[in-house]
Amino acid sequence: MVEQVVENQEPFRVDAHEESGMSQTAEAGNSDVDIAAISSGSETRIAVASQWQLVWWRFRRHKIAMISGVVILLVYLTVPVTEFLAPFDPYKYNSTRVFAPPQPVHLFDEGRLAPHVCGYQVTFNEETYKREFVTNCDNKIFLRLLAKGQQYKLLGLFGSSVHLVGPEDPAESFYLLGSDRLGRDLLSRLVYGTRISMSIGLVGVTLSLLLGVTLGGISGYYGGAVDTLVQRMVEFLRSIPSIPLWMGLAAAIPLVWDPLVVYFCITVILSFLGWTGLARAVRGSCLAIKTEDYVLSARLVGASELRIIFRHMLPAMYSYIIARITLAVPGMILAETSLSFLGLGLRPPTISWGVLLKEAQEVQVLAQAPWLLVPAVAVIATVLAFNFLGDGIRDAADPYG
Image (tube, rainbow, N blue to C red; front, side, top):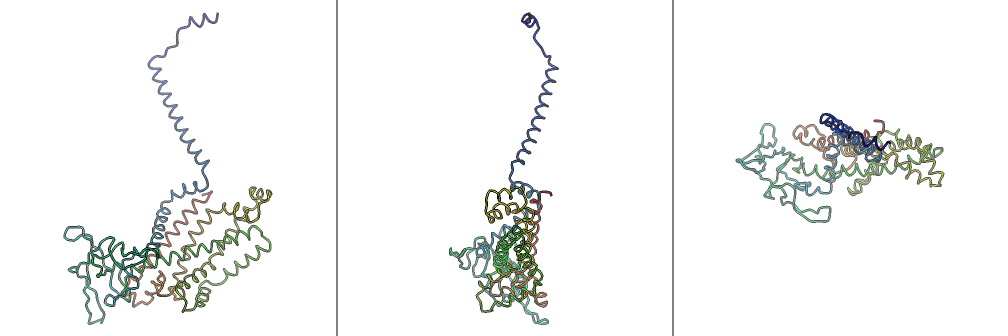
């Protein structure tokens, strides 16, 4: 009976209008599904992402921090190729070019691309009894990329005489940033000073990181007498005024020591004074983390105490530690610059930003050659870049930001 009823029923038909409506409904439904799928895919991607991926995604949205990171990367890339980037020997002096002003670069000559600088015509001012430099564009010094110049060893291994920019005639000289009191090229000395100032900040922070993380982690994990001893030492070091302490330690370095040994000693001094803040921060984080379930589980399964500290607790603070490091490097750079400026840090013939700024201590010299303050611009730009980078990393690593 049921089979006969089914056979006698007319087939189900849909007219064109209803079919169009169903098609649109189906398309709308598919669109909703696609949107839901995309949203679900994004949520799934975030859910399975690691901590470092989440930090990187948030950091990319901080444009100023990204730009600062590129600037710092470019600055550090100059360190191994300093000899190639510097157009001249930073120690080569020229008595006829004392306090020579900067020479701007002209890209075109008579309608064709020909980078050059205008030469100097030296005159003597009878009223001030000073030598003056007058621009003489009849004497043009043409420049070229990958020019031949003085011999050097790249990375101390490979001999070469090619420089990034130089005069077509190796016998000629030019001063894009001017010269100092001995007629030495300030641009070349600035490039060489970048190597020392940037490396001393990086090496100093590395040593401070080792001291701060180790002592801070042990202090926060063990507590008790160990914590008291470490914290009293931190408080004692932080209570001593920085400048007098630097002066006392730097004055203990003999003047006859090799510049490389002095560089190492200054790095150790800055590291000895710079680990206390990081140690306190790590200690506070360890006090909060050591009661977490995963730390207690590691302790129950028999993990050693050092493994618990360095394998389970410190990784939870990596993002914060990296942000702290980026904010500590400019402090090291400023400390070295201040000591060298006061004559207590690195000394000539070593070249650093602080040593270069020492040339601008006298007001009369600064009034005659204001371009000697160019190293201060490099210090300010680098410190700001590090601060912006540290702010970006700190915001990206903050899970509650």
